[in-house]
Image (cartoon, rainbow, N blue to C red; front, side, top):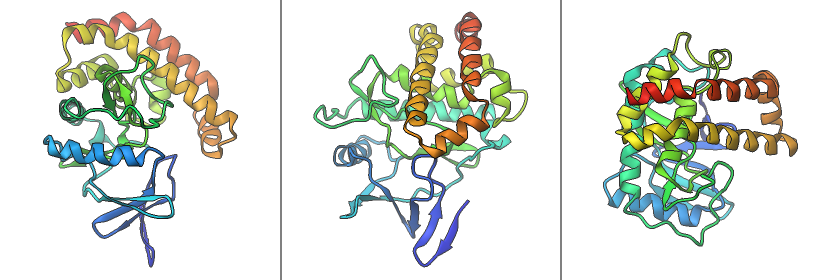
Length: 269
């Protein structure tokens, strides 16, 4: 959804930046993350290594905002439409993430930067992971993922961690009742997890480890929501209430553990 006015075109900015993202022609202006002075050189370095599927930094403003190039295309918003949840779309998300990681492997991570730990890999790593490849942060054209946006949660980690976080959103790795709230009916999680892994080109060793890392990522995401709710964030309080409260998280975590071997078999078969 967008709204136009004298100040520009308002873009959907997700839960963190809701109502604060504005497009003015070829430039998007949004609140700058605290690590912008490290993140902007990283985004520019990605382009130097062949990954042009992310916004290019334009400037930082004096009032704490950043300007980035606008990437045209379609972004899926909840409830997620059928076109965004096809297996072809899912495979293209995996392929795009692999391209990001291959380019990012050649870019040194600024270890002095204050990278956010909210969704970061607890094991750490040498690659700057996106950590938030949800449908709202992927740009599509003609049913294929062509760009990633919103690197606010980027932090050092393992490539497999980024795959696990992506799987949570796109498979989705949720119990069927929770998945049905925002996703089309009838999605087969084991099959879709395999499609994502195939699109990424995940190794056999990483495929064997992926279900366990997804469980770990789910724990980290739950802690992230817990902190936001404890701080009284109205967006997260409302989302938690509307999506089944903590019982939803309990069901999903139990479901993941109960189906761990099913997922591993699907990935390795």
